[in-house]
Amino acid sequence: MADLSGLSANAHPFIPELYCECRQLFEKFANGLREEGCLRTLAKSIDVALLLELYSTFLTWGEKLKVDYPAETEGSLNYKLRHRRASREMTEDLLNGLKTLFRKAVDHLNVLNESVQFLIDVEKAAGGEEGKFRMPGLREIGPLFTALRRGVKVTVAIFSIQRQLELLFKAHKLPRDERDEMEMYEAYLTPYLDQVVEMVRQWRHEALAEKDLKCDKAPGSDSVDDIMWFCKRLALANMKRKMEFPKQTDPLFLPQSDIIEIDHSSMTDWERVQEWMLREPLSASKRLQSVHPYVCTFKDCPTAGLYYSEQGSWKGHEEVKHRMVYVCHKCPGVTTRSREMVKAHLLTHCTGNRVDSAKEIEANLRFCYRSEDMNTSDKKDTCLICLKESPLPDLYKHLAGHMEEITRLVLPSCETDYKGTCIFCRKEFPREGLANHVVSHLDGTAISS
Image (cartoon, rainbow, N blue to C red; front, side):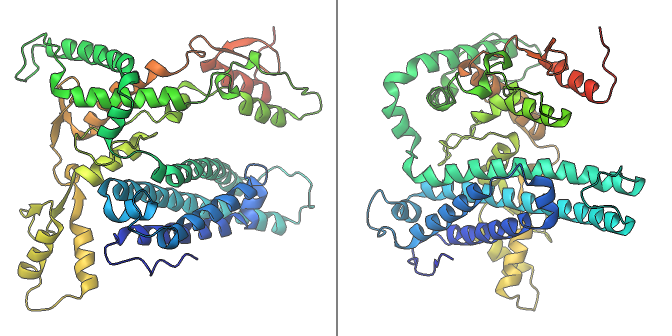
């Protein structure tokens, strides 16, 4: 266990707390994986050695917060966490995301183990022979499907945790100031910026031409001067994606016909399907998610260099960092972004004659802290790209669509007209219908010709 008590007084206290919470959840998750239900369901899907390696690296990372370099050494992780707001907030973002992933994984694991334990108990009560297949009864179908669904979710959670930890481990090596990055890559940014500006101008021209659009720009105007900073941010993201995403020769990006054939003769039907699914190229949505298409839309965000693979993570960042307010639970009219102001209000107006403990005050502060769209149901905002006004939930989906289109500019196009081959009849089908066709062979409904 990493001892973080030696951090100096000017250290931000939230980082060690988040680290300790993540470490405890990591231990809980690892212990849950050792239970019989999980071992039976996920034995072939989980790389235990990888998890142990990640856990060891995570502990080492925590140790570096205390003793690796003195706080006065500029460029060290310790220095950035203590003295640079951008690095500190990025680390908080990553640790918060990691904590959320661990909590979800632990919840899925608990349900999985409970469901499988129920099936084990029923099997023992029925007196079935060990290792002999028995059709599940009506009581077992629900828990069986629950275990299978949760098993998939646990496997996906492990992959997400691995990606989040990798981002955390290399976070201190990345340039954090957006202006520094712009200057560093200025010579290479122009072609990407031209692509982004062209798309944004087209969207803006189409949107502003609508008669019912309310804005201070003339219909048909396509100037992007007001959001050139955001165009540059999107262009920088595309340039980095082009440098970092997997090569087009990666099996995940290739059609099935380009991968070496494997002999299926000795496999059962389900083993063949499992092997086929692993060899399938990534779907368009997964490929898009793998290059983190979403960026913060607030101009002065100190962690603008952090990109998001899921809309929920991106929206969560903006809600927590840019759209959170304190609303007094007793005086709804009292709303502020300042923690100190609402704390003073609670102490002065809402405690009466009694004196609340520090823990009670902290609990009240957490209760008062909420995102803007939670307490203002009709809250609207304007898309900074096309200037359309929408309620916040719709606005995030709308903005996500813009950013996904821009991200596709740098994705390889090998799946545009992709067709896959059925492993049973060797016929070609479009991606949308291939999975259903394979399942039809398994349940006996496939039409032979």
